[in-house]
Amino acid sequence: MRPRRLCYNLPIAAKEQPMGFNPTLTRNLLVIATVWGGAFLAALWVSLVFWTYRDMRARGRDPLAPILAALVVAVLSLPGLLVYLILRPSRTLDEEYQRTLEEEALLQAVEEAARCPGCGRRVKENWMVCPHCHTKLKKVCHHCGKLMELSWNICPYCGTPAPGVRKEGGTLDDALQTIAQASED
Image (cartoon, rainbow, N blue to C red; front, side, top):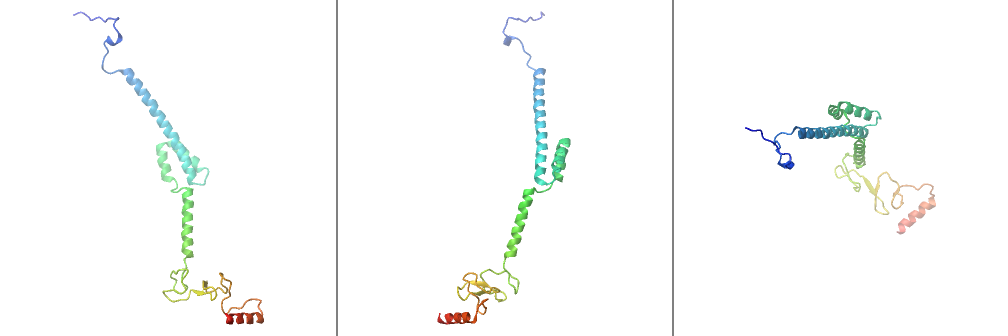
């Protein structure tokens, strides 16, 4: 058999090309994939370090703690992140502040609820008598008809003194005039 000769005058497409494995193309693709993967991992590592720093700053007042947490993640990478996630405070400073405000609001609401001095049960602000033990809670102003606390000697709505209470600095003539006016009404 005669060896086959190639004709060099034919176009490139006409030459015989092996259809199998091309090591140069595979090597180039592998290098590109490695570079992209390395760049992704480097970006992930840097972003984890920054996230750790910012997260720790939001969770604590100590200025050294965010730096130490970021260093742990920078040196140990993903295992360092796991260590940080286990050891970090459970709430941010803002969450702690909101929780404190909610607790104070609840305590204030509980303290403000009116209670009967006789039985200690809750009563409404506009009740004159406790429906459970019949203790008198409020008295009515004889002039304007609004409810007053039992300890008040003067109505805060109309300024009229409660019956049986002396006006300070008043004379006997003033008291007699008040009685005369009350009998005329």
